[in-house]
Amino acid sequence: MSTSNPSQSPRVDAGRSAHDSPRLLVLARPTLDQAAIQTFLDDEGLAWRRTPTATDPENLVEVAGRVCYLSFGRQQSDKTNAEYISHLVREQHESVLEHATWSFILSGISRGFSHQLVRHRVGFSFSQLSQQYHDETEAPLVMPRAIREIPSASEKWHAAAEKSLDTYRELIGELEEIQTDLPPREQLRLLRTAARSVLPAATETKLVFSANGRALRHFLQVRGTIEGDEEMRLVSALLARIMQEEAPALFADFRVEHLSDGLPVVRQSSASH
Ligand SMILES: Cc1cc2nc3c(=O)[nH]c(=O)nc-3n(C[C@H](O)[C@H](O)[C@H](O)COP(=O)(O)OP(=O)(O)OC[C@H]3O[C@@H](n4cnc5c(N)ncnc54)[C@H](O)[C@@H]3O)c2cc1C
Image 1 (cartoon, rainbow, N blue to C red):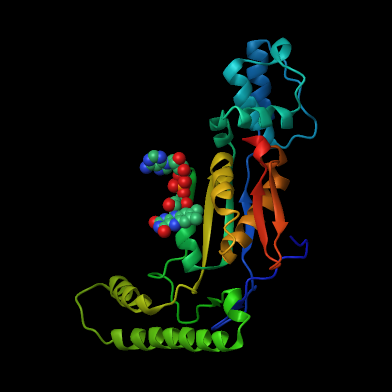
Image 2: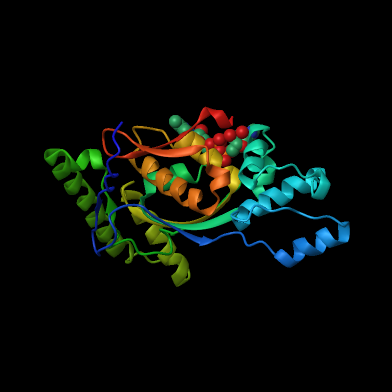
């Protein structure tokens, strides 16, 4: 295992410049309504001893857990927020993690990768760049690092990818000549849908996704350490690092390591299971 910085995921821009690795940004995060919690506590005649450093999502999860047992005031143990959440996870009382939801914008990834990502059905929502509404004639391409490292493979990849994009452009031109009774918007959809069938899996895409804490943990568990999957490792590491800033108590059992190839993997310590 090495601790060197992760290599960037190579990316080829067919038409315009852009960043050359997956980019993941948080668009929205949970905000706790302090007044609402206080109103509830006052109504119930309860007090809640909080961990001063806990973030809003961590406090939200703690409140949800404590409401289950009404473990406020005299019923509250000395556990910190992190200890409380770690206990919930150990006990597999993980539905409380579902209350905390984040929204992200992810770009610089291939369509091949996004197809794997959107397989996560539970606790995830997706909104992805459309190849029916969006013109892909200038679409950037994401080149796998394994190919970049071998000049002859890289050359073949470039040739094939550029040929696909050229064919896409030519098909758009030819299909524009088709006469149909469709309204213009549907005519455009028809030709882009037909032409996109030659676009490579390397075509860059962007998407917004939202996911709750439990779903994000599941994603990191099943996807974070797939050593042969460069993009998955890069995105998982970005996600793990972000979540450890956003809600460290929910993701304390994950760690990002770097393998000898310079790329990160996300591992989970067994202690939390
Ligand atoms: C190493 C690896 C190889 C893979 N190879 C392939 C492949 O060759 N072909 C392929 O099609 N996919 C493949 N996948 C995708 C995989 O099958 C899942 O679709 C994907 O990882 C999403 O995982 P999930 O179903 O656990 O997640 P989610 O869809 O988010 O579901 C989360 C959890 O909810 C529960 N759940 C969800 N839906 C149901 C249900 N209908 N019934 C019962 N429980 C449910 C399960 O506990 C599940 O783990 C692979 C995944 C990995 C990690």
